[in-house]
Image (cartoon, rainbow, N blue to C red; front, side, top):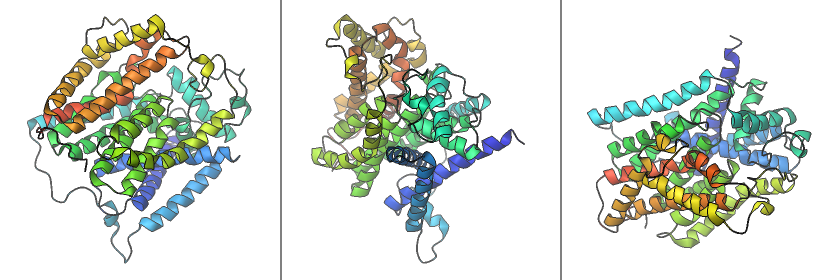
Length: 472
């Protein structure tokens, strides 16, 4: 029983995140939602995580310890729950009004096969996570170490964080994942490397579930939606690498949070209204709190997704809320000492080299070859991705031929991210083309769900040329 208690505490921490996220979501967007529970539960999970990270950064900036942030967030969620509660004695199930009325038709044989693949991939990631404690390098030395420091000290302004000579890799990395792990430790009353894996193992099932529901809404085609989710659920890159979905690295959490930010942005394009705009801006602002690469994804969400159609004015309207979420973390980073040995610290301009040189050309050539499936690959990227990227390029070409605005927007987002991340590594000092090639699979994980959504869109009934269903 003593072995199970930490897992029960971890489950309680996840339930608190879900409950808090649900309260905030319902207070912001009352009434019927386009999501079913397959999309609503991951959305509540993401909103709860984003609120936890934003509150934690704000508390530490004010000189407070993280338990104060937890208490303040609990009060805020309680107020939000009271506001979201229906008046007049309406039944509790009214709070869960989701999706369209009426039961869906029965699954055909192909849909059953896709559903089996989804369940196999999602449950496998969760099972592999809880079977082992934190044991991968980055999950222990970077994210797990930060979580334990936050759990014991309650703030990053502690000797562990502030001493640049201490063995502490990348201590200027964002803290959403360590804060979530620290929250689990707080609920369990100890830093338990096994129980925290329950939280880590949920990111991938949440990602796959939300991707299915988002595709179902946008494509209005259940088989295409199942295809999008299955493409990610069984993609080897999420299972056969050191940054796998069950490793405790931040790549899968970033992919999950980005899917939520992108999905709510696309829903705002379709539904309109300031409430959806605020929700998408809040989740977009949380992306740089997960990993530094989240800053690129946030910028792409603001620029490529908001234009054309709704225009730059609506994109600019999101900036204040995005800035309010990110700014406390940026101010915290300025108060941390520099680490001259960290060659990936994007906040140190001295690490940038003026010209990309030959390595930049090699990185670009590898990226193009990997997308086309022609690159000689000693690092196993072809095994991890298979034909995923060539199929994506083919589907992007089909969207261009059909003049499908939504498909082209998704394809442009994927290609722009790959180009920007490759350029970023090309200009960082001491990052050779070999380093890029060996990390290509992991850097592409956050954008893979967008590519899967784009691929699945080509399988649904083609729209009229030039159509863009969600723009108005």
